[in-house]
Length: 117
Image 1 (cartoon, rainbow, N blue to C red):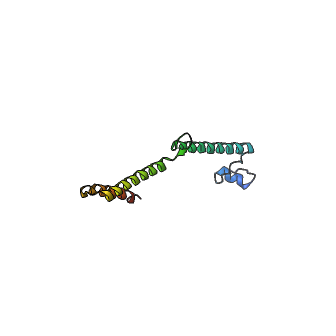
Image 2: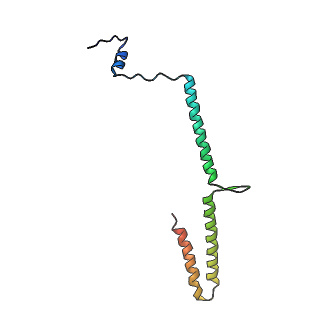
Image 3: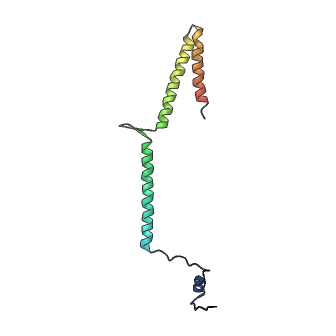
């Protein structure tokens, strides 16, 4: 058995592999470099996120549009026009042969909006 001289018990435990000393604290310059690196990465992520958002918007010379809201209101406008047409034709038609066309068109538009989740 080999006897080693150690200054304190921590040195003995470390040399035998039973104690692992924590890494020495970083200097202020190393900390500031890490902090600057993290801040830079966060700024890069923010710029990428803003670019993704801008790519998904429709732009005109004086305003920006969100594509999903534009499509929703377009569908709503066309549906309202079809409903008004069907209602007008059902009220004013004297011939009953064409009423089935307008009533089925009206019911299909209503079903389209009611079946949305």
